[in-house]
Picture 1: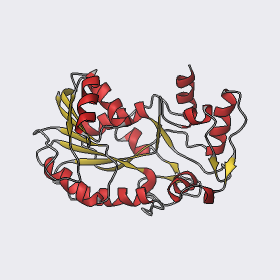
Picture 2 (picture 1 turned 90 degrees about the vertical axis):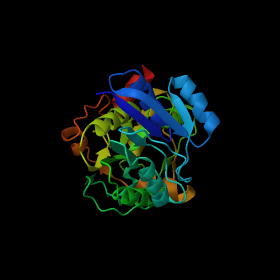
Picture 3 (picture 1 turned 180 degrees about the horizontal axis):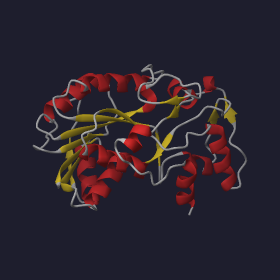
Picture 4 (picture 1 turned 45 degrees about the vertical axis):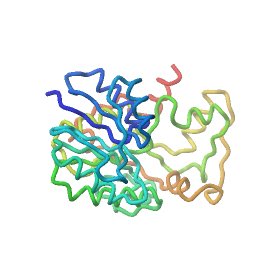
Length: 278
């Protein structure tokens, strides 16, 4: 059944989602996207063929959600994650469903282990701690909700391919730490399934192949005839970047597959690379 969709914080993932929804009118009875900058929102909306409006979760009352809508929050947390989610919940009180795009950064380091949704919540980055606060606030929702804990998002125009091709990529640490990823097309598919089902709680959104970051970078470089990217000590990059790239987590996607029923188009980063390079 076609219902309204509202995409709060329409950046890279939200734009891909809006494009998919506009191609599937049987799913969406109208799509509204929001950005903090109203002019940017309207311009992007015009490009996508959807309604673009200004909304900022740091300003309660700036977001309007129609009754029965599916609300996708893809906006990164700001200075007050709990307050922003409170504003989202107030605006979406008559919504049918809330899909919050969170992050696997909420988990503690994995030491190479497979990490499912029961893994300890012990973030080591500021962004991970903000996601934990946002998820905790979301748990108080009276509206049906789900949190998709996304791994590293990549796809056309985003990811290490462009940086390696441009010669700017550096491997943080010795390169043996596993990094989980998800192609933006598969994340969009997961968001749509999450919006249309009643599966609740947290669900990891990752592909099947969380490989060591050094091995991935070296293989991508080789595809371009370039030398392996240099390794740099974690102390030479920001704690945020170091935390994301050295946590060594192999993210399990069992709930994504078994409960949400997502069939991955790109089950491995190699599939995504092959598609990008033709």
